[in-house]
Image 1 (cartoon, helix red, strand yellow):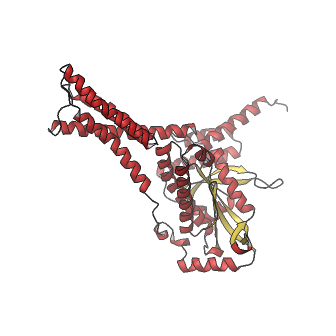
Image 2 (tube, rainbow, N blue to C red):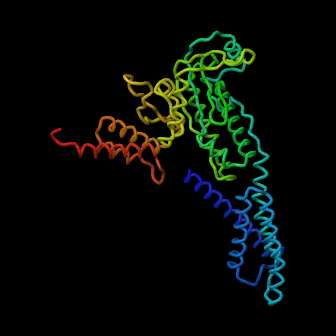
Length: 412
């Protein structure tokens, strides 16, 4: 969480520097062409340094401080001091004009306010589902309406289904730190994003609240290739959440930490709820496993984890990598292979594909207990200057295994 907060601060710092530089250059140009008098008799670089320092500070305040009252107080306080500086300059017979400073401060304060106003007025776009939904599993509107009608009238039954679960793992932190109205607005936009994207891919919302969202994809709802549809939906949600998260980080220093789990299997499809408000929904271990996978992302630093069956039936449409063997059912059932979804098929560049191949080879060697060779492959697969928690975890396990082996007596 601390690292993510630093990342948001870096973005705010960069934005303030860019706004400050723009305001300073605009003011200097206005002075050079004669629209405004010169700030002082100092050389050009000195005048630029003075303007840049003041405009950067004003842009930072107006971009970071949330209450508008305090932003106005800081701007007003800065503007009030300009006549005083002008008076002192004349008293000491130093050439000085306050008009360049006034323009620079107003520009540096006005741009963040304009950005804030545009962001507050912006609304989620109504997406055309056909814009990004592959034709292989795109149902017609009539087919969707008919499948929903049929599902509502069917008796309780078990059906093959793919469940997508989205978990906002830091929802309690957001609720405790963001202004109440802002937090509610971001959470509602996030829930709308979930539902719109999943529905566009043929899913049907089964659960939606501040902590989690669940959508079901199955033939009963008109989706034949439901594992593939759910995987495409998960990637689309991940991309759209990133944009919304950046906005939240810029405004409040907090990102939206969404983790996704996808599981395919048999579920109970039945109407649930009070007699007058029953709607068709799902229940079962497959849905529970999707939720557990969403939470398991926190261990590996991943965003989308999928079950073995989802990977088997829909993995051909995405780039994925093995992550771990997790105990889904109690022994004597063996652990299940879990995969991380990276991107759509054939969308990674050559360097990423090479790292993916090395990673897969490293995992194969790791599971064969060939520790030294596995370490070499995994280190080669690790990207430069970017953390890969899944690789780091495997390297740590290799170190543990070798340390354990070194302490076992030779004759044991």
